Amino acid sequence: MSNLTTSSPPAGEPDGVSIISSKGRVCRNRFDAALDDLPLDDFPVDCDFSSNFLPNDEALNALYRGMGTPESDLAAARADWDRRMDSLLDVNGGKILYYGAKPNPGDNIWLVPIPDDRLSIRFWDGGEGEEREFFFDYVDLCEKKAVNSPAGYEVEAYFNLRHHLAPGGVGPIHSNEAWAGFSRSDIPEGRERFTALACNPCVLHRPGKEDFFFSVPDYPEEVSPVPGVKPGVHFATAGTATW
Image (tube, rainbow, N blue to C red; front, side, top):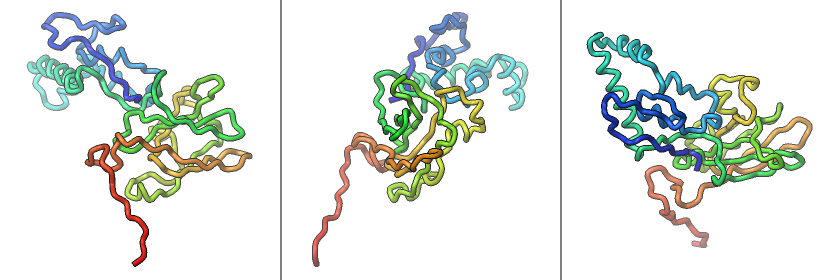
């Protein structure tokens, strides 16, 4: 599973003691330090950790001033920020959970070889199993590396009765980076990723080649097909008969 967990320094650091990350960086809180353990090269290009998770004192002061916090209370507000960021670790057992990162060595993946092509389509859960979704990208198995989609390659998803209430599950599948506003030239090679619903029938369009039809894989039984229903529950199906 690719929603990698990362450990953090021990909780309850006493006041005045610096928190040092695994990369030797002095950090403002334990969450900040744990970010240094994440493989940031595998993250979507639209992730902005500096503004979302690593604000400096000046940025926090501006934030709290905008909320009407008096100058005399800014230090306490910053300390509260650090405590709340650390609590994000504590509720997950001292780890950071994230979604969509590319698979690590040893992770389970699903592969669909593309006929008459050097590439395959690689699927992985990326932490979206409970949503019955997969991430996917293109990989060169000979070089064992991910690549961005070649120009003109487009996957289109067809309607699936299993997902008849799911929005956005039909039509051309654009990359997550494209949805975030990035152009193809702005996406580093191998960082592009897409999202598709489990079991959806799809077609890959390629310039000058026949359309290639395939299905998105399904999840094993430990992932419930119905939100709110415990995994492993079996649904009875009707059998044919004559009346």
